[in-house]
Length: 317
Image (cartoon, rainbow, N blue to C red; front, side):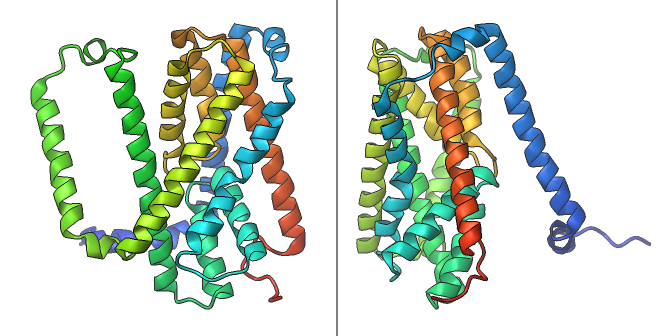
């Protein structure tokens, strides 16, 4: 007689399976498959727009590339100040670690950078695994909260100004479903508030400081993004860029998804048709941004691999 499949048995099987060579190959091919699909969709869009039109619309303003450099480094620099609230480390070591974390999250799979940071902090900072995990978890919770607050604020502003027509989008949706959704959200809020101490360990003072750092970085980062896009399409209204920022935030919060910049490039090209901005210009600026991201990530990964920083087996200084 077959033994029943329990949650514990399934979890044990899954933990063993995901560490096997076959599972790792399957995950790698899955990531490649997703990237291939996104690239195919982008190629189809570019063929529809016209390859020559896109090529002649590539950004040429030097400030575009200066802004890109600022955006590329904004998160690693901000994380130096953020994690200094809970850890003590040398600026140069922290900067390297946060750069590598960024590369892992962008090019491997979401949250793989956090796993690297966990191993780095546990070894280099002589901290316990539970403390490191709690600090990284709390930082991610605050970061996600900032992202969702800004995204909901932007969507609310777009709805309030009439740029997003809620009636046209909702149509004849059964309001029972809407009410049930609101009740579920309310229950989740109560549960999170009730079990906050088990989900979140930072004291209030540090939480406020880290929140302020994230919101400052978040605001500056997206302001520079709007300035960079405005260099390519100077006549577009601010409502267009607010819509793009909202989509950009949502795409970047997608869990366990590789090459989110390519996902945003595809979404941005599709969105341009409905917002009244040139698809060729949008395609040019988003694809150049994605290409620069890839080049920067490959260059940094190669350098840090040579220096022995991309694993936790590097020699102590």
